[in-house]
Length: 122
Image (cartoon, rainbow, N blue to C red; front, side, top):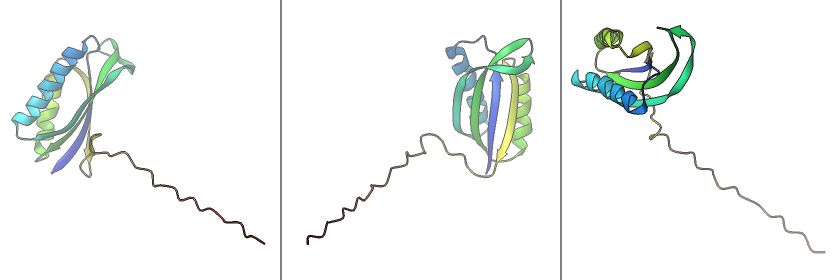
């Protein structure tokens, strides 16, 4: 399996409901081609480093996905390029399956042993 981390930026003028719809469209496209979405998170609206299509801000969305073959990456790039709401994207291939926040268990602290020294009685 091939694992990818995809960060894409969508139009900043959308409400949270509209961003959720875009996330749903992207997930539906991936799953319709028999691939899997590992994790899909909306970060927040952030300022861009430079204007893109006259926008100074963008809604950042992080997608961790599992593609059965690497040929789908090019098809997915075409999908993102044709999607009118996606301003920019970056696709990074991962070496291993990404860990989702739900899988990350909070590290339990080991109990601290306190040794008491007994005073010697004279």
